[in-house]
Length: 92
View 1 (cartoon, rainbow, N blue to C red):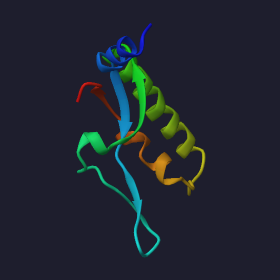
View 2: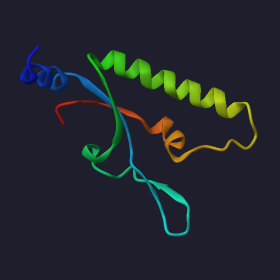
View 3: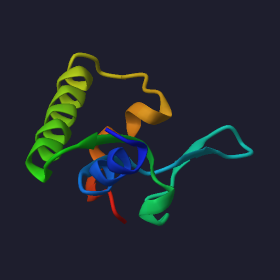
């Protein structure tokens, strides 16, 4: 498969992304859900929307299962965005 063809495959698929997370001056983290989708992170590619949504659902279920095991979960900023992941067409 040549380089151009590979790019076309990516453009025709779906991406699972999460909003950007930034550390503020006070040391707290903020999740920027208002950021344009083009600035969202963690892109994982899928051939179909159904595959993407399945992975998103799996991640959300795993997140809630993990947080139920402790009364005070310690989460990284990236882990805290697990329920905010979205599936978007990769051509956006």
